[in-house]
Image 1 (tube, rainbow, N blue to C red):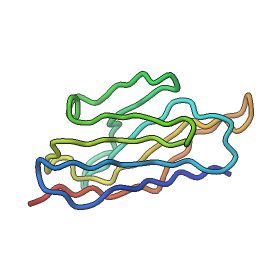
Image 2: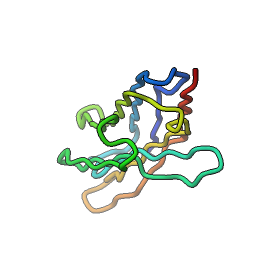
Image 3: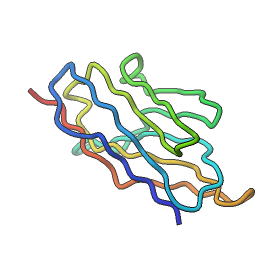
Image 4: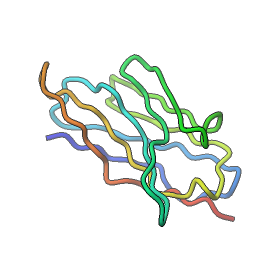
Length: 120
């Protein structure tokens, strides 16, 4: 059983920063790709940032230059540093990870989400 848990969300003023963490626990051999998604009220869920096992990253245009995704493979943890936050960044943020539980068996897992609210 693998579990992902996000933390670090909260209320922040426009222009502020937050750092989200996503820790994976359970039967984990390794983690392949990982990503952060978000879903704002009344909108579809969207991919925000993705990181490969080797550390290659890509971002949705709306957060390019403001958000940074990173990972600590030793801790099975993925981070999302969010700077210059805007009200449009308000959403529930979810992490996902492609987790190998054996050498050949892997599944994609989702965390329960953490709320980020950007408001003055």
